[in-house]
Structures are given as C-alpha cells and as structure tokens.
Amino acid sequence: MRMDHRRDFLKTGAMLAAGALVRGQNSNAIKVGLIGCGGRGTGAASQALHADDYAELTAVADVYGPAVDNCLNELNRNQAARVKVDDAHRFVGLDAYQKVIDSGVDVVLLATPPGFRPTHLRACVEAGKHVFCEKPIATDAPGVRHVLESVKIARQKNLSLVAGFCWRYSAHVVATFDQIHSGAIGDLAAYYATYYTNPVKPMPPANTRPAGMSDVEWQVKNWYNFVWLCGDSLVEQAVHSADKIAWAMRDQPPVSCVALGGRQIPAEGGNIYDHFEVNYLYPNGFRAFLACRQIDNCWNENADYILGAKGSATIGRGPLPRITGQTEWTFTGQKNDMYQYEHDVLFASIRQNKPVNDGERMASSTMLAMMGRMAAYTGQEITWDQAMNSEERIFPQSLTWDMPLPVAPMARPGQTKLI
Image (tube, rainbow, N blue to C red):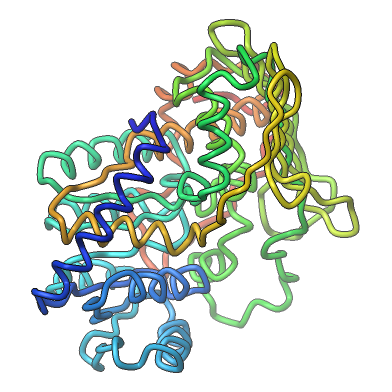
C-alpha cells in the first residue's frame, strides 16, 4: 500500500518526464482494449489515448452492439487517428471480454458494471495484461477475495493495476491528506463524509420492458438498480467517500460498523436502497461516519469533515480544501484532472517498466463500503472479519443471457441474515 502520496506524485512526475524521452525513441504502440462501452468506459478510453503518444485503441467489448457503436463514434470524433478498431475487433456478448483480452492488446480498461469485475480482472492478469480497473471492484465478499488473489498474480507478473479511486490521483486532495498525515490537525478524532446526490440511473417502469427480453438482459440494461450488478448505491458511488476514510486511516481496516439504510422512494422492480448512514469504529476508538442519499429534490453535498485534536480539515465544502485550528492551511497549488492522471500514471509505469499496483487498497476500500451495506441490510453490528469472510454470493456463478433470474427481495433489517 502506498502511504506517502506526495512522494508518489513527485516520483510519477519524474517518470512521466522520462517517459516522454522513451516515447521519442520508441514508436512501439501500446495497444488498448476496452471492456464496457458506456459513458465511463468511453471516458476511460479517451483518457488512455491521451496518456501516451503511441497508445492505440484496437479492441472493444460490450453486451450491447449499440453501446459499441456509440463509444467508437464518440472517440472517432476527437481521436480518430488513435482509434484502430476494425469490424473483427468489435465484440458483443457476455463472453466478449475474453475476446478483447485474446486480441493482442497490452492494456485492458475494465468499465463494466462492478459485478463482472472479479472475473474480468482475473482473466486479464492471467493473460499478462496491464489493467485500469474502475471502482468498486466487486459486489460481494467472495468477489473481493477473488480480486485479492488476482492482485497477487499481477504483482508476481510485474503488471500494473491502477484503480478508479480517482481522488487518490487528485493533486489538491493528495496535498490535503499529506497535511493530515503530517500532523497538521493532530491526532484524528472523527471523520464525517457526505455523498448526497440525485438518483444515478432510475429504474424504468416494468411496462417499458420489451416483450421477450430476458431477466438477465433487463437487469443488465438497468444494472444500477440491482445489488448483484452494482453493489447498491453505497458500494457503487459513495465508495469514494469510504476510500477517503480509508486513506485518512492509512488503509488500516476498522474493527466494526453499524448502519442504517432503506428505500424511501419506491422503485418498481429494483432492489437497492436509496440512503445509508454508516458508523465505523476503529481500534483506537476513532469514529468515522458516512452518509449517502440518492433522492431527487433534496439538498446535495459531497464533502469530508475531518476532526483532529489540533484542528479540522474540510474537503468539498467550497472550491479548495482547507485546514483550520493551530495550523491554518489552504491548498494553493494547481489542480489537475484526476481522471486523466490515473491513466498518465498507468502508461508511464508501463513505458518505464516500473509497475504500480493499487490492488490491496482498492479491495479494502470496496470492502469498507460493502461492510456498511451488510450492517444496514441486517441491522446488526458487523466486524471487519465477518465482512471479509462472508460467504454470500450475490453475483451468479454461471450467467447466461437467457436464463431466468428472479430479483432478490430487498433486504429488511432485523430479518435479513449475514451469510
């Protein structure tokens, strides 16, 4: 796990400068494959092509043909010279991911719904591919454990694995956590994170489902509304807040958590909650609180309030992070594009043959959000060990496009059991 983030940024800056010289001498292309052609995947592909002078997109995959078309049309409008995907390398279907991996690419971008990521990541690293993996990395604990095994394989093979926890690549947030870790607010006392926003992908009415569309296709098409695919709103979106809590605690896990959650606004057919609040307990008595909501016409905020013995730090409540107390500090540097920088770091590491691996922390941050979901679903206090060792598999082990897949009932605290 990387602890000194400032040093990482400086080191990577030197790598990028050196990488420019290498690129000037070496015209070998880095071939990029994209798995998941939605908005996030299209954005990731664009960033990958901007990250290296000789990066080329050579293969793409999605379960829907129109998604492939829309993605390539968008990329061709702005980066046509780098888009070299012929008809034979436009793959569609549940097995399309493997076809991208087998197509001769060097780097794979994983941007499918999260439930698919453990399988896709394992296939990538076993095939010797560098990976950009969006967050979160799984929707159940067996998936997290599977990913941790893949992380070890990637390290053994000297492969780079960069995670889509983008705030870890944000210059102003890195600088803030450097201040916190250097003692600017003293010993940490409490952390309060908010992620209040509108619904991401509302569930459409059941009567809009086309005749003959299978359960699997309908659920994948509306993936954000099903726990097996997205992990629920806490795990899919507010996991960014969980990741910052983990960062503050130097990626050491909590002892336990309790949580509230539920569905305030009915959504026909789906089974995710629209609000959570989690209380994490750490070994030294430190408490972290994460609150998230996805409901229209409500007050929205994405912020972090970090309290210490000598002051406090605030991120997101205003244009720049700041520290008040015994130390007065405001970020005065230059902000960067954190989404682009993730890919800059990935491609520089490949050119320099200096692999970066975000694997352990991307797994632990995903689990931090997931244990909050477990606590809210069951109404029980959940320990870190219970969460990590959970045997509940919510992602189907054998998935086919036409199989029946009844929607699991929404969790009910006090009745839903931890497995």
